Length: 111
Length: 121
Image 1 (cartoon, each protein chain N blue to C red):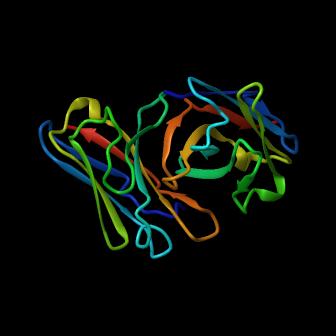
Image 2 (image 1 turned 60 degrees about the vertical axis):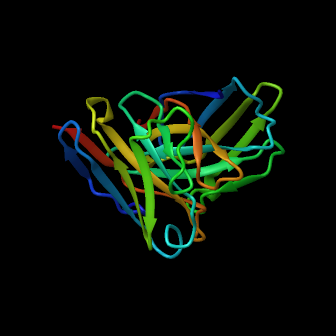
């Protein structure tokens, strides 16, 4: 069982916006602004999409945005496109037994 | 842009040692900016942080693996390695190497493609 909780699947039609949640605790998401999001397509290396809650690395589309409220972080994909189909994982710094915790992943399907 | 590539056996027998190497290219493994990390994903499960090494050799391990785990670095070859002893079927996973930004905890900006390691007799 992953330390951070994500919905197993999220879907939307092309052009729509979807939001993926990542729920942790006061040991991680709730206390630290070190939340990251990764896109993982089969057979490819995971790609960093958002770091420090809401920052986008250079080269990442501005259709991807991140936010946080309390113990829950969120990734929003706006203007959904077919190429956005992938698994998405969140991670957070934690002051528990391990310094890094991950979510279980959310499969995004474009209908 | 840094690139990472894992290498090592895809099949390991139970009770033996799993050994993997990650080769860093396009950047310096001796950079002050990164921790060199291992992460794995067991079939049907989420990602699990294994541990990291800094180029100086300092390490930080997942407590659940610490008694069986060694991560080392060879700066002359631009490589870092993982050794996991006494493996069981529960260690079957895709193993990734990644670079964690030191100033942005839990931020992995580059990943290898991953290598599947199966523990089976």
